[in-house]
Image (cartoon, rainbow, N blue to C red; front, top):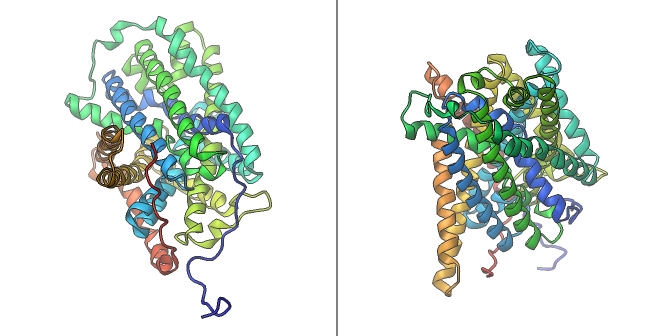
Length: 469
């Protein structure tokens, strides 16, 4: 059969995006900026019900996050493909697994933005809407979602510039609390170690599920590999260095906040870092400065995650797993449909959550939901690493085999634990306790018709490159 008469197969062609726009510094800023949003700054209030035992949960979560960072760095060297966890699941387990992971991670991205913007509003309301009027809170949240979307629609350059500067500024409150704050610790605040009424294991597990949200983003450079210059080298370095730097300030600053403010006071605070710095200086002006820096930090996270919201659907659209519209680029070379659709969905879920309650309860539910939908792709990435390294070891002796499989196994165990504990413990009704699972399950079920429609036009997964030392 001639080439002219051959019937085309596979997905329709998708426009090529500008590649290699982000250098190593900008890629690291993407990791730092996406991990450090408002999660860590709201976390002490979320963890107050567990008490200082949460510090153990944070330390264990950090071990899991670092394991995931090293694992993603290794996977990105082997398969520096757009989409990160989606690409690994698809190459290892086929198109159904690929679509499921792409859809779940997309849910993580836009539901995570909904959670970030709720936490962001809590710090904005240190300056306005102090009585937390729901309609005003929703209006502020919509500004926080759609302004970063407008920046992203202007192109990768505009997004990268905002990300770099906000990443620098967001380290200021964490470094301050991680250094100066340590000198203001009152040991009396650690006398009651577990305030949850649950067992130590149960308290640590529940706290870990909340802590995970603060580390979402370790995979962002892998997801946006197409945008990173020399991804074979820079994606892995940015992932490890960005996560390590974040982990240090996370652990020290959280220790300082729990040592400065009692768990009872933290449970009543909507801006715990501002509360801690006010306790340190005995006034309110420092709290306002801290809140302003957290507002900048949250805006940077919303900016970075808005790009990630569009990158996963773009990568999946290239392979025919997502509707072709997600692969179209606007005049500035960005996937506008993915940005707009993701921001719209984040807006809807944010409004739905506010309809039921306010403040930290909304934040926690959205945190758990995004944690569930992120942990599953993390687990599939770990399984992909284990599968490929076992194949490598059968075919030839490779160094660091035990390290790679061991790290992937740690990542897999932590991913399963995060899913298990991601529920609103302490709620009187069962449906409220499992509301994060209900939200996540409903959002996932909405993707089933899309998979059924596109399954026959999906291209075959690419071959997996051989392992390189």
